[in-house]
Image 1 (spheres, rainbow, N blue to C red):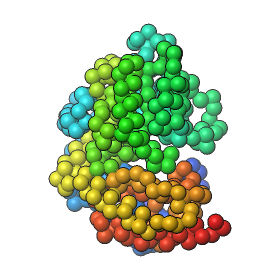
Image 2 (cartoon, one colour):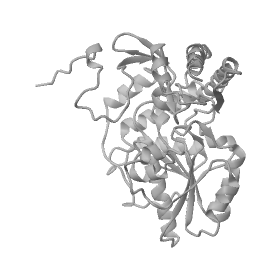
Image 3 (cartoon, rainbow, N blue to C red):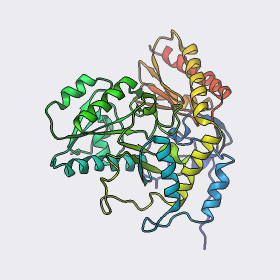
Image 4 (cartoon, rainbow, N blue to C red):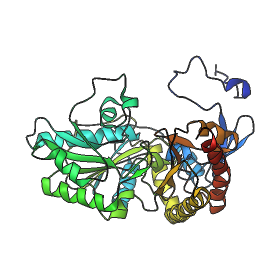
Length: 407
């Protein structure tokens, strides 16, 4: 007999005693979406400035994506990597063409992609005869919540309570090549440098193009892997397929996830020649990674992005949104900086601003606050200029009012 699941309504929104208490949730239960808007179970509508945390590339219920996924579900959802999966070859070829790299491993999440990158770095070192390989990572970085990716992350708050952390990491500040050189001077165990092209959870902190080029040159000089985490900032969010492309460089390892599947769980590790053959059968694997549904989602997401010109849209609308934020917040006491590019923007304030998540939701706008003081906007890449103006019209008055409280 089939179980009957009661529909969500206002009475079912409070936290269930059966769901593990791992999220500080806003008291909203969403029921459906269309484009850049979502509705909750009580009929309230919200402009989606969060995009599922940079995941919903095509927004909600995209008319080209939905039938493609329905078609795939009716054929195959999952098989196993015991067998060839044609969609892997198609999507891998596309990612190789877009990135200028050579090979791809598919997994299901950004954490898994970053974990695989760290394993690649360690095996790269061991293959060179280095018994204690070390990876350079960065202050304020976020790479995931597994023990290894948590150790690579630069946030003591999320690390607290999970020690002992994994060893083998050297931490440096962003955008300072001299400190990177000093921290690794004379260390023959260094095998890789690992960072986000634009830090997401760390507060929307971009790596400067000239710094990216300096690190690429240093990795070439010292035979290290350059590993760039594009999980949040990749897949067209900045107006190029991958944020590091603004610097005109190629990494050796590039983890992807989030926006690659428009909401269907998917991750990937794209590699260049230096890292492409490090893993051999038995070195790494996954049950769900590269399944037919996820591959179809990735293939269709890229196809639709190309057909609809969403890279140009992200750059144009993101530029409009950033300019509008600068216009409305110019001279406002308490606004430290507006950072980012394309549709990955952060408004950095002088004080913690977590209360703005609920206040914005009450006003019909979904946002997040990261690094305690940064309002983060990562909406779907289909956002229009009119919707960008709506974001500004809702957010800026609330932000000004907040900053005026106990300045």
